[in-house]
Image (cartoon, rainbow, N blue to C red; front, side, top):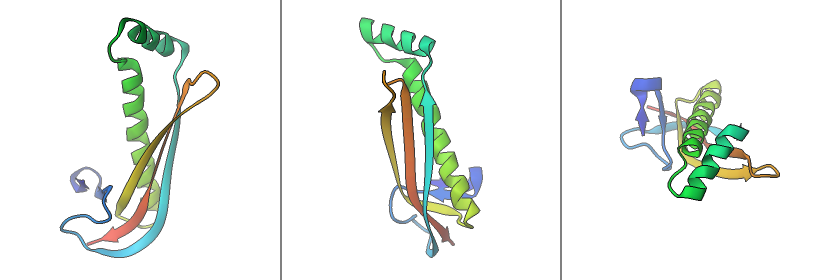
Length: 114
């Protein structure tokens, strides 16, 4: 995905970026976000589960966590002097005794492209 217009960073879950040449590998970068779902959000999601349908509350929390983890990944890549991240992998885990925490992690290879 070309993000030059937004952030001057390219990011891709493939090992390359079409039309760009990787000239330097900076190393593997990671992003981690742990997001808690509070009682009210959990209660509202429970109602969706009981009555059927999709939980807008959890969906919004998941979208926020995913966006934040990708921003963190780009920031860490930029701190190494990279202008792109390739081979991005995103993972999701539910944590906590009641499963009330969501952990989203992302990893990729920071590179310089031209």
